[in-house]
Amino acid sequence: MNMSISEIEHEIIEEFGVFENWVDKYDYLIDLGKSIPKINPIYKTDENTISGCQSQVWLHAKCENSVIVFTADSDAIMTKGIVALLIRVLSNQKPEKILDAKLDFIAKIGLEEQLSQTRATGLSSMIKQMKIYAFAFKEKL
Image (cartoon, rainbow, N blue to C red; front, top):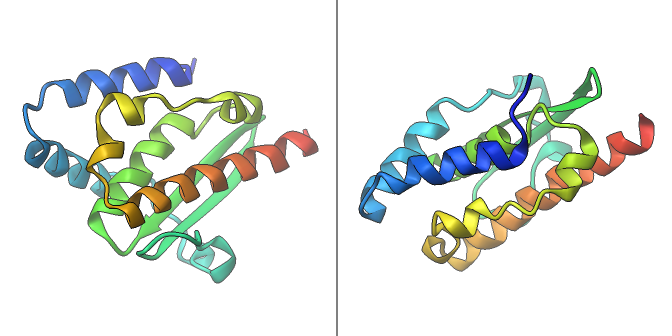
């Protein structure tokens, strides 16, 4: 059984809670980016590029057994870590759960205030795109 979105968010909040400063949290984010579910190179297309990100970010989604599976990649290590977090929370979830997700963990781990304006815009673009995929798949189920 998959964990719920809120259970995964709680787990992430606890993991980030062990670090005392943002230097360590950034290192952890970069490590998370290394474990990202890799996007198939054939999906590294313009239509899978997230606009609004300062770096290149590709996001692909497919629906399997009524849940959405996300894969992604980025040319920036920090962005890769951020999208890895989002995938960890939202991948393998039902479309309606993704649409309802508040993603409070982002504020609770203090990520929002650590991001530059362009990275914050990129983060919201990634979330928006994931929810657009969820909406599209929900309509098809």
